[in-house]
Image (cartoon, one colour):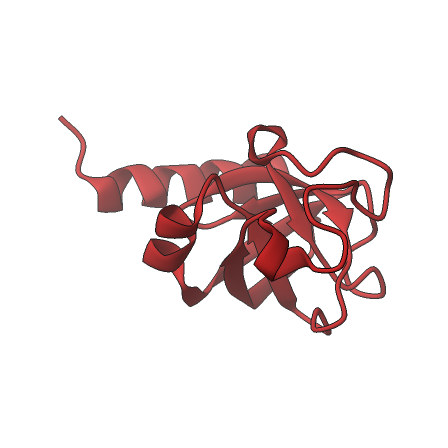
Length: 119
């Protein structure tokens, strides 16, 4: 049985091996939901790329000057997501991850983790 630390380490090693030229960042990753009080005045609507804001689509909001929209983004502990949204507070290496519900979002909170970006 693998410990979580070993699995995360192996995944990180695989990402670095498969994508050796991928830009690497340490990012501040925060969680959000599509609820009306977090996305007012546009709750539960579409992202900057036109996709429906649905947590099952594994979407993130990024600064498109740092991470191009449409890129695949690997976030330590969370896996692969698609850069599909932007936000007023998203600048530099800050990333917002669309989560299932407020409880899950609060549990993640705000963390500084490694991030890889693949075209």
